[in-house]
Length: 437
Image (tube, rainbow, N blue to C red; front, side):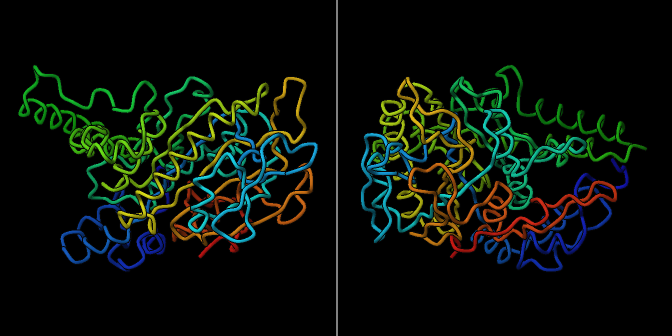
């Protein structure tokens, strides 16, 4: 890895693509994190700062850990041996049907697109999770960043006092596969990873430490870090220093995680489930400027009793997701917020002896709502029983190219590690333009 610059490209043209209207103001310099520092100068202009905030885009991923069934959600197969007991229902978009387990989302298809033709080929939890987090197969040499880290890097604001990337994963199932991966982008873009509860621990200074003491300790740490950095032109050191410099801002963001700050009527709309509360926190976070939030809802791995499992889980998904979309829309946030349902793969069309569905990565579905999306669109098709993709087959890189395009990010952009270019998605990935506005 080169020690001549930070771990990602700082070229002027990449600064321009990152922040569109800022133009030459974001041109990079040789200094570490120079692109971010030039934006700090631009933000002194209140007109440009206001425009930046207004145009800022966000992502909320609803991660259905374990592998949700496409046949019980976005791609039902009525009357077929693989179809199961649930019927399809009409949606607000003529000609589009989804499972009866999602009646509230059926009424909101005008803001949502469905892709029904994913063939990702990796059917194990670890491999499937990594693929749908990185958007590509893992590299044996380079530690790649995941979707959250790239979105944080591309859409985060240099003046932000809130986290760039937050992940909620409170269940035990699959937690080892859910950790965020900043990769070569460094610690600055690592997620705040919450597993025990919905409020980050250790954000408050200890009662025995005064505010003056806390500032003095931060100054001492910075002094020692500067001494250590002398003669070491290291992107890793610079990334850690950048992360530490945001500590006080992160401490001030604690209230964003507290749903008690919301009116009782809003809390009642979301409801009492943990998933619903974390969706509400996700809305609070993106409203405050957090670029990327991932909310995990586990226990979809239904090798047995698939239909009872999906009755319960789809009810939670349907209510929480529809309430989130309504809330975002009412607040004027949905047009700049991309809401995704992602998982590691789907479930087998074949129903096993335990009335379950097993892992299946050859023909499955995801949804996209909000920012940059053509609501009511459906891309791709599976055969009558859902065993294979009949039309429009795509893979994970194509999904990520589509996500980045919806957000206004050039999916062909490259970072550099030394002389090696690292594209945001695999070379040759195609954008699914049919689901884009």
